[in-house]
Length: 208
Ligand SMILES: [Zn+2]
Ligand SMILES: [Zn+2]
Image (cartoon, rainbow, N blue to C red):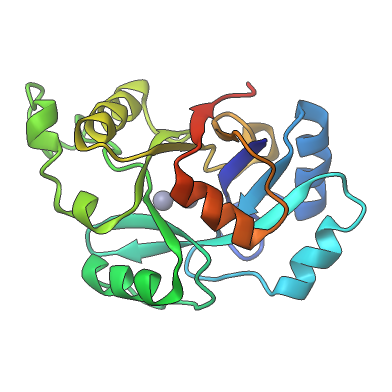
């Protein structure tokens, strides 16, 4: 099952130009089975998503992209809006208490550009990034970062034995599906999504 796990829509994400109805049309067009709405710090009301998904031919799931002091974290199965910038340790506690699942988004975004580390940073050094020990998985394919940033994320995830997901981080409709997560099993609802994420039965892919 092909799912884009990282999508922003307007107006809930101010940075996005995507109208949810257009997103559905695009998903059908490119052969995406579903996508996950991961706005910043806000989860969609369940009834609204159900109405949007009805008869659309695609599955729509809800997630949340939480800003922590150690980086952005995608969470699934957490029915709670977390405001402000929180320490990642605190988010981990919330995720565990809710039986939810967390993915460190674009972990090495701009790591070369901003000189966070020098060009010779090894995978072993990169794997020491603190946030990595507080999440369940790593986004190894993100549509908003460079190929090098994604490559480092993938190597680090492999090194640590953490599963790797893909998501477009779409802010425009034509970005949907640039990176996706291909699940081996059928996912009917959000509870299934958490189960399948936890199982590790998935790999990153692309529809663009
Ligand atoms: Zn982000
Ligand atoms: Zn995002």
